Image (cartoon, rainbow, N blue to C red):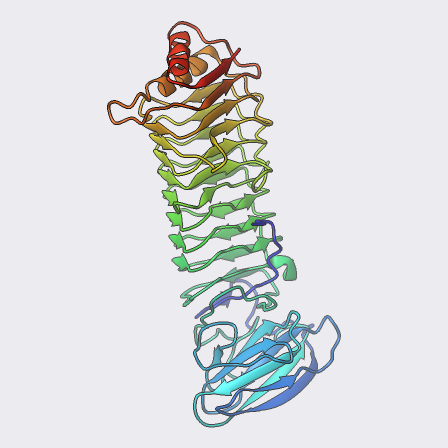
Length: 435
């Protein structure tokens, strides 16, 4: 799955969202480039949008009637429904307006749940202020909008300064793509506690992105923070799928509450500017995979420490960390495999790795162990061999047999108890290669 896909969707479901710095008025440059009106009944009807300049793709939708309208934006076959959930059911109460980016949409469809209403549609180069609020720079939206799925082609336009997002009612993705809003430098997700789908925006301009209340993402975390030197994830506990954000400007990444990915999810952040990564409570991962073969490199990080990590359901594979000298897994108990015969792998661009601490709690390693791009010291080599040899099927361990252990590169030659452990592993039916 390509974690780098451009998040062209910016769809926010919000109540009480306010712009932090600008005055509550539309941007002076906002102009109406086209307008049309759709009579809305209890049967879905659609209307083609006026042909306008490519710069005028912000749609302001005003419900100029007495009943709720449900709106969809799309192609000539688009239809709206009254569920209030999903891309085909943007709910707009009576007298309320909201502004979205039209993207590739050329038609607007609408429906009511009962009697008729009128939908007034304006296209401009920014949100159009009108009665009922909504849109960028005008009064807050008075109703939460709930979506499911990936809202491709829709966007809420942000014009100035900072964005505050609070009290969100969401059934799906909340995406914020600041490529359309290069002046937005601060984004604060306020009271947002959970995001119920994959989260994959690209924050191209924001230098500070804050999630002070976010606890869980019911999907994968794939956001890329291109310019953010500060990303606050202080309350974040887990992602049900992957944790693979890109921190391409941050120096320090601190996840004080983070405990786990899903059992099939991967822990694979990336960013070459990161020099410290703090994970004091991280305990369970579907996989731990860092490198260009997955999301991207972390070439600036010297230490990879997992003080509480005890279970990796699949494999632990680290590549493309050229500054890495120290890996700590002091309480690891179980490491599975990637389905291709690999459990523990350091085989590309980790040549500076000197210290690898696997602790004394190891109970099970499923498949091959490979350290071919390392410079492990003799203590690390010996302790790794001793830990693997102790997997003899007693004391709650699973017998390690029929696998390959390779510790080469410029790593030290085993000595003493390490040599004894190497012989034990070979006697148990493994192939062991060291310097």
